Length: 117
Image 1 (cartoon, rainbow, N blue to C red):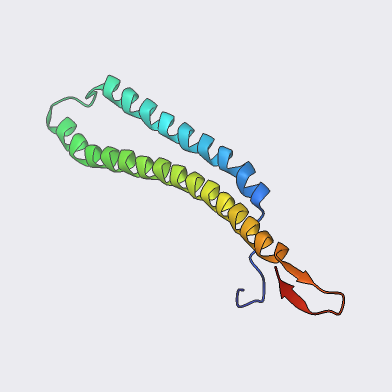
Image 2 (cartoon, helix red, strand yellow; image 1 turned 30 degrees about the horizontal axis):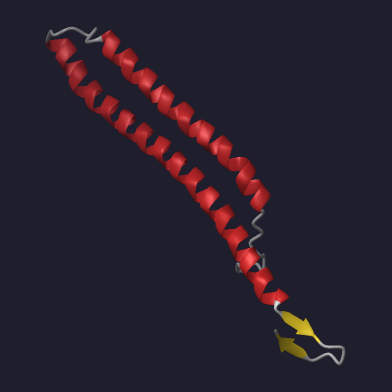
């Protein structure tokens, strides 16, 4: 329970329905990164190898590497979130079945006393 008194309401169906969308976005981001890498590689070094070109490359090169690394981290993170959502949904299903099994072994007698079977 949170400080505001709200209860965490996890809907297994929502987790299962959302996981494929997260996966799709992860794949799309990975494909965009591949397209970016191929486009940049195809462009080569259009700034040239003169003094101004080398200054530009010194400033530009590290940013490209950071963008590529960050995008890869984001794509991997989305894939990880998708896996966690699926695991969470499966875990809740397993937990519900376990609890259902525990309570199905308990019977209430006509006189209101509980007895385990």
